[in-house]
Length: 430
Image (cartoon, rainbow, N blue to C red; front, side):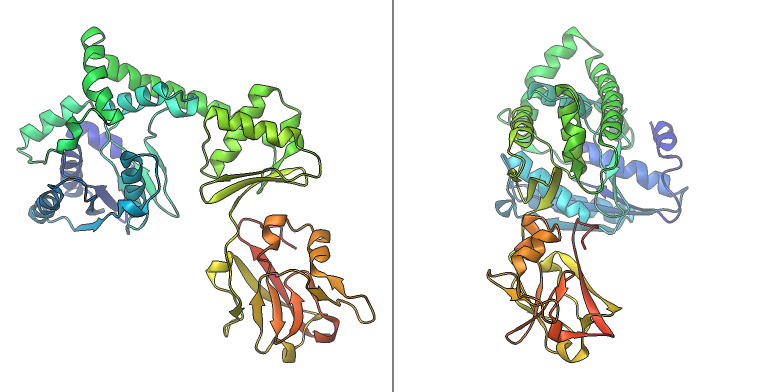
């Protein structure tokens, strides 16, 4: 098995690679840690192990102690953290625990987060998703690798190995591992499949796990083709989807394109939700702005383009710091450009950024009218969800500038500084 593992990992592990094993202490992750430990003797990559204490089992403390002890024996750096599942949203305990794990993985100082999922896990995943009505993408199971945050990747190098091979390896090398008693509880969906569905399936079809894993690879190839078709149908998507591209397609390709666009923003809808959203987008009045909230994100149609954007933050009036920037809570970047008609130096002292309260007006030109800020934002094509926290720059009771849109005439200078506001996720902001 070690030789097969070495072939799978060839080219993935460089001397400078920082690798973290998600180490639960169970059989699978114990084998994975030992394989990488042996491989590290020949390849000088950095190896560490990480354990997440879920706090669910009464034995969780002893599992943590076991993992720390094994890593000490192997001389592998070890770290751990404790999950607070009560503060994580999710439809089930399984889902909340999974979310906690991936949140913890994103915080690790590693490029590759290596997970010990194997062939039997893949078969179980395919059955589970098919039973829940998954499409091609869901039936593709777990990918061998995928991106996780900036500069990180999830990697599953054992997907081709059956659990029996892992058990044989652990016994050959005398490895010790912990047994999670919850794995025997069939009230959990995956445990039910593992204990009540898959064994009789294997008794009738002995190669079922390998066949299901092979089917997952076929589904993955089909999903890739559907994604390629969606890219062709979408044309240029940066960062919104042109509704005209959606309207000219037949029903199946509309759903495929919408599903692909949402997945680019890490949103996955059930078929019923997707059909309802598509209907709302296509049938709403031309001047309407359909809206769907999905967790902390929203799907919106504006000026015949579809957007996926975070829900507007609740920002507070903020004094500009010495660098004249705004904190990350404003969800954007304020920069200053040297240009005629920008803010005069005297008016840049003591500036405070405030969100719109309603009714604000500004005079952009000498002798011109006082214009409602609301009208200026509409004319500039600012989407409605951004207008509520578009920075208005004040000096005491004087509205000096609407960032990126207008500077009050009395505050301008021929050699002034123009405030440009670039909201997160909207590179084409004026």
